[in-house]
Image (cartoon, rainbow, N blue to C red; front, side, top):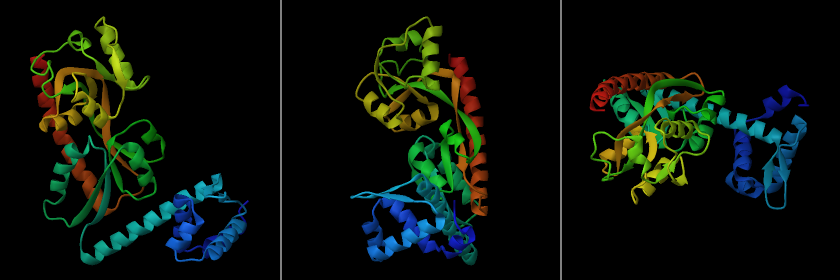
Length: 323
């Protein structure tokens, strides 16, 4: 049981939180002592005192490193959040002093970044708004921990099941259709009409087993009276799939917007064949009450999403005629 809760809270300073985070991230007392300009005995004494106040062990010591205990992971998570909140507080104060809209740190999935962000950022600075936006691209599994630690204000991309089970706030902006794709110049690329029978004769990169997209792909071939084609590999990694497909005539399924961005670069092509029952939700994830600058960015992202949906409505109508 935590001893004298108010006592240990009052004794904690931001520097102490920084020390805890450093130990948790580096797994090294000596490295943390160097980073924080402390002697290792002083660091060990302080940590032991904190653990005594809490009544629990935060780290397990081994000969080579220190490892977080269950209690240590709890403390580390909250320490990271407090430090992230303080950094955002400092940023908002600086913005208020300068008369600017503030700083926003955005995480974006590679598929969403070229679709949503260019137009949204142009809107954000029209009329002139002095908002500083930092964009970090990455996969969802890399961006979500940063969002949870308050190192990101907002994440833009596909809203998948795991992301919706972390206690974060979310909003769907639009649904992204999924299409069949191949390399630029693929033998089927010039056709205006492509069937499942046509694509069954080519090798495939299939989504991992038992994922929604894999189930939908299996059903699409089944409805066409065809078995799933021979799979050369299983993968949901867009960049890997693109690289493999560029060197072969294999096919795979991915969001149409993601493929369109590679198509514009002359790397891939979209085939006129869709998985109509698995559109992917694209939206925003955030942790706390948004700052004024973040509210404005979210508003322009909504406007940009509406334009994407409107343009897609025209494209879908033309597509249905072509089919």
